Image (cartoon, rainbow, N blue to C red):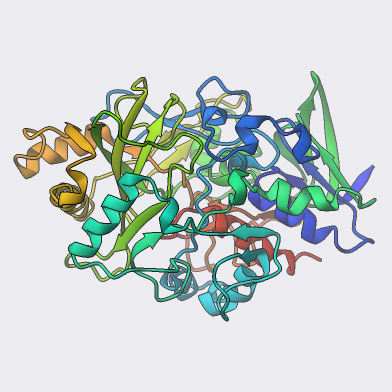
Length: 516
């Protein structure tokens, strides 16, 4: 059977796009997902269902691709890069922060020649995708698939209350709605886990619409390569249950995310010709930008030992509050973020694990650089689709990036001196006093202890024809090829100053109207 649309990747973008495209009953849509599928909440494993559970991102979890990445050249142990291998994708295993980028993020995309992606043009789609349970105004939706809420202050963990008091004392404004266009400062973080249930796009978008006769969902299907006739995509070669076959489609759409989408393009012969030739892959289209421009948010955590008897998050959301601010000397608003968290039963797959993955309980303040200068790249290690790509993040290669993160560390240490932390913190574990004694010492500590925030973007960036590194145009069409699009975070020219799940969904909402 030939489908009108073949969507590869059942993550946040893929579930959203499949749902929207199948609203037209005359269009046949098939969604292919490499991981397992769960058709309703009742059959969803607890580690996917409950937001406080972290096992789904364990290195040995069946729901995790468990990539390895090199954050810096000084990093001794490669970073764990958790990506969801299950229906709902990384939105089924993530921390559930549902934070939009700041308007300038999208306006910057527009200024680079992608005028359909300005914040004003995206705002109706942000409203369309959500039901905000706390805020009712022109910037928020009231009847969309994704529920958004903020934990009330009376329910905050002690470390979150202490952090909030310290940030207010430091002069940061209180921020009741971090998804407001003018938002900055300290407050509760918007989440998509009301009642403790992680509301992925699979639950919110796909499951209520599985009854559609024109929508087919196939799980445990690994895509090997896109099939071309001349310069026209006509299908995708896949493997399932040990059998290889081709799924044919009039339109092939990659929604596999910032890692798997460029990997699949490269395996299909679309990318830098020299790299492809080296691996013996026949070149279909020489596009030097595929896999380049890898963007993400580096993080480091200040690890703290709690005093005996301090209440820590167990079933509660680990991420509850935070502060966003603009670094000294920066022209980019909200380019930094700090947030406190507490934990019990820490698992190795926790993306915020810090340097003590086996420590059963603790406190931390996490410092995140939200708009890094540095960019990395993704390259193939093999023509075998079962072999993971090489991920080189190149964090902190910019003096400006190191300067801003040093400031974040010193700011956090200053706030830990606030009296509200006294009853909570026994001692600081890391960084040590020696680590923060000089800029050089702190830079060394940063390079050795950075982790990814799991927001990989930019590896199939969109841009005008004048941009030699652009992989897709602003309508998500792969340059120089017909009937092939990429619709996910890989098209972002830069990673947004926020957690990326909301942006992944809005990309699919925006692109759905351009696909005939």
